[in-house]
Image (cartoon, rainbow, N blue to C red; front, side, top):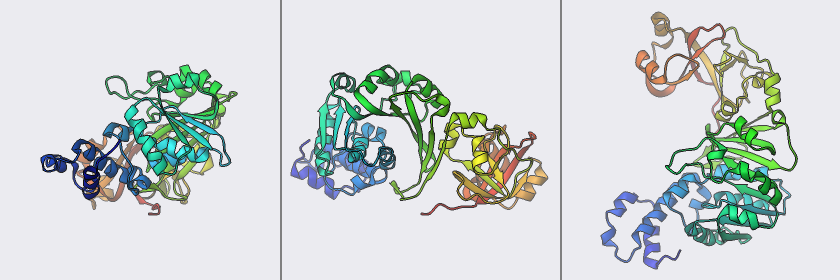
Length: 409
């Protein structure tokens, strides 16, 4: 993609301006390639949070909105690279290159990398950006990933991120509905690589994904700031029984899109460990309340966690935990319990009468957040956290809490 001097100057001078306002002024700049300029300005603004190290560089080219929306964030791409052994000096092929974020960070672990993408425009952007990022060891190939896979020479690692939307733009939740179907390609992928990293939608059912793919060695559920973003499966030669596959529950903490060194939460377990755990249950809540992070909730590590962190579950289906002493390294949010009550009006007034706003969470409770907010006359926000849940004796209660631990900023 070649941009004339006027267009480049316009992008530099208006890089922080509102794109919609600029579009209305197009006639004032006849020498500017306005459609391209607006794409670049919008892309750079989106990168400020999603890909901060690229945002800080002049000259990076950005794709249209959809490709940027679908690409990984810098934080999740860095995490993928951390899975690769440090001493790797081998070869990588990214069969679904896209905007190139994952390929960029993964390639730093390899002597040679190949980026494969069927959209010619994205390949042109990659050809421009990779050298600018000092990644001259990446070869760019404009081709269909599956066709390339069939003809390619073997490599050490393959990365593949199948499209997770159907032909009508709806999100898919099964491997068979993704394009390409990784389950159908599994044998060929492993014939061409020692290891395969598959990035899937967090909406997919992990147990079903492991059933569909016969050579899963490990699974990673990756959240960022407690929002589940990706499901990663590592395929390899040989088989691991589904109940013995290590499942890594990761919650990355970022500030302005950038991972903080040493920040985040990690919990690893197997289905076998979960199935063999009986779980521990509380008769009444203790001094502290815990809500597991999004990755653990997605993975279903509900019973085993009570043994690892010495907490007790409030109810088999509530997925909230309690303890008498603060567990500082619990993988989730921690709260100091200020009070609790049933839905009795007098109890509600005694426990909640002094507040006008609260952050409300519902776990195993016969009312929605909106219904509770209306009934309790509470607006959203503030420093009070209210959990509506069910205890082990089936009693419905409201738990008022305040944050017990603040993550470092």
